Image 1 (tube, rainbow, N blue to C red):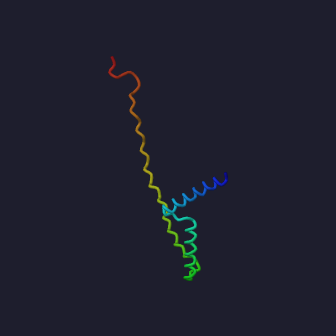
Image 2: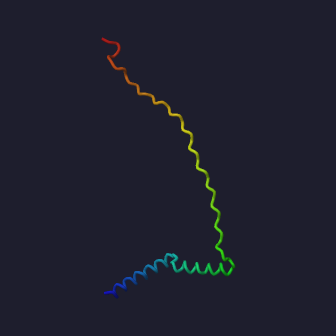
Image 3: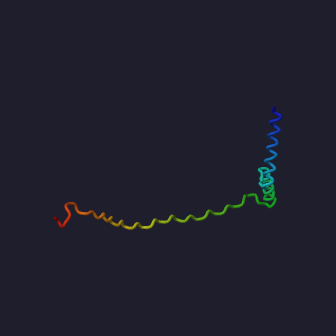
Length: 89
């Protein structure tokens, strides 16, 4: 039973490895190898310190909000006067 499960896991891992390779993705092992080669090249060239970081870009001050316009008074709706209609009987 355990052997069959192991075979399925191995088959799944092989499939994933093939797909990663087909897509051209770098695995952790690939990245570790590149880092090690880069470290060797840097030490061979005499660069014992990592390259200096770029200075951070200056931050622009926040914009001031535009001045608010004075509120215009609300025009009350026209309401007909209360009471009997004009012109009477």
